[in-house]
Length: 505
Image 1 (cartoon, helix red, strand yellow):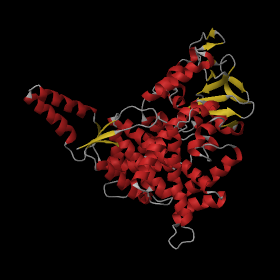
Image 2 (cartoon, rainbow, N blue to C red):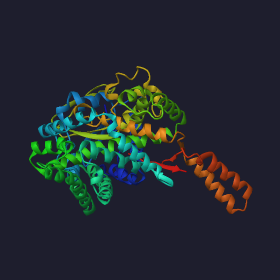
Image 3 (cartoon, rainbow, N blue to C red):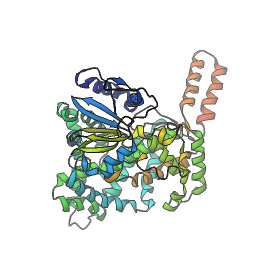
């Protein structure tokens, strides 16, 4: 027995409209929560489920006249992404993403995907064994980027600049300084815009062709030109005396296999997603949570100070000793996974292990062509998996052995053969940046209270209440902002990658 997602309009178009209406507020996942929370009490063949404690693991969705499913059960995810991996494919996702990404691991199935995956896997294996000193220059630039700001600084763009620089230098083998500032800025803007439009096109499924605005096409061209720059430089350097072996290790390797510069360029775009966005989002969400949980931040700071006294260089050995940092990253990835929601389409008639029968515990027959959406975001918040405090940020939950064998109940970087190639690189890179920022700004605090104090000071000053105004100014500027090592953070809400603003005195 499955619950049925209710709809009112023909072809269930009101479900799609609700998604588009909530996109500007950046609370799409929250809106999904309302429907998923109702799953145990939804209509089933016109009859309401009587047992409210029944926890259904699969929900029927009627959209565009077709039947699909939604699940948050780890057993179903393991079946789709691992044990019955060959039964599932990307379906309409390829067409929705192709204008931006071209040919690569995120748009391919079958043998082409396996080939692309193996080509890129070799490069990430090489990167994963690099000494952490290779991050030093880029982390220095990150700290300088943040420190150079007067007043309020948005940390999210700084994190994206940091991860773009490391991806360019460590994976492509070319310093980002070789790319003009305008090109970098245009790339970032175009990449984010193209990604947003691609997300809308994905929701249109087979009707993706109906939404392809000119600005989107221009943004896709900009992204490809940026990636194409590295291909052109690498191919031009072949045979020259000053050719860089670091560049040859990836780009020329790809060219030797693919024999087509455009295909190599497309592969680099896919690498940019894995190398840039994954780490930047992880760092953004980590600081978003840390400043809202001072106790966690204090304990993490103590661990950093103990394992890495000031003046010592961060090494893999020292990083491995920072177990609480690892728990913080796990908890951040649990609440804000890199791929919060996704979908697969049945390439042939197949089964899901649970969701059928009167109690929802029997297998379910999935016909060829049917789509199954799955939400890692909501699975990571299931109380049946993580306890009654599943919605709380509590890194200590990772300290005991209860979650050691959770399997597909924890999917921070997807799972199965398609697991993220950057799943080892991203936490390592993020850790280097997080440790240095905590060391540089040992008194990280939320800027909300400081901003309120400043606002009160200005209000009292306008009212002529100079004595009270001066007292409020002292609270705002001395207690919160006068310490040169203090950075106050304040973050507006977002549903995918958190933006942070920092007040630097």
